[in-house]
Length: 135
Image (cartoon, rainbow, N blue to C red; front, top):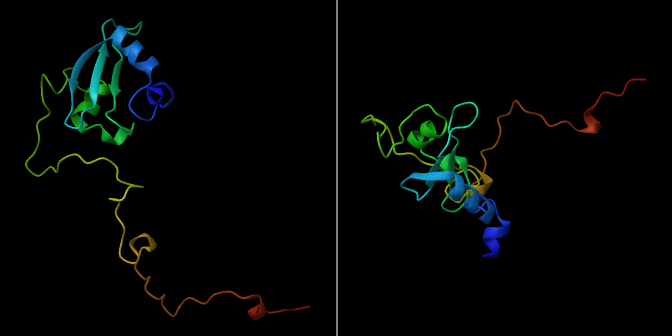
């Protein structure tokens, strides 16, 4: 319960849940368990605000392209009503893995535990002794 009160990065705070529950209507849920809401009434500009409550860590890259388009008013209908057409060559959505154990680590990366290849002979490190000392 304390986690819900004080941590905004892990789902949503109690205040956010109460506010979204009071003003918003549940629209749908994605394959990761993120829940999407839309305000019941339009704002002064004529648009309804849209919200996501993350299932776990609040990381924007966890929102799939179809829900992202709906959140930013690119698509009027949510993916639960009108799913985004997938091309056969498209890969499934994957969140940004930087900083996680699944992040890409190239060959020779220190994080991968590998050894870096020796640099080519065209590099010569500077040392103060090699500098020409002119009066």
